[in-house]
Length: 185
Image 1: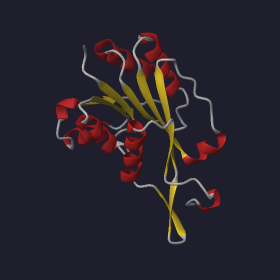
Image 2 (image 1 turned 60 degrees about the vertical axis):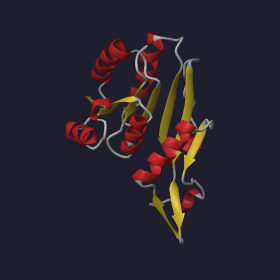
Image 3 (image 1 turned 30 degrees about the vertical axis):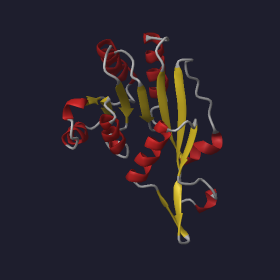
């Protein structure tokens, strides 16, 4: 049996602590990132660099992403968990990842943590997933403090995503989304 592993899309910024936490949970973590320097720094900052693997690819380029995922899945099978923070500029990336995993193995269960910005909460989209996928959606909100609001810090985001991974909830809101008119501008 192969080691358990995680695929993290967007893990060099606000999700870097999630990557380190997954390594502490004994996952091999594969991080998709566009910036080779950030991927290298992420690996240098981990206590177990042999468990962190950077995949330098622009996930907006479907052909390149497909090629990298194909190589990864041939080597390791499907990931146990996918943590996905994909910008709206790449609407094909997450469906591509889900489809490629589905074509690999429908008998193995896996988990998808789908992170979305706060505005997505009010236009909830249907995200179809295969039967063997446990889907959890995470919305990034904001913090209200002393008559003002601010966006979440990277630490707050990572802590919230870790909570979403470990909880039984299918939907998690980090911070608050209401009142919407008080969000930071």
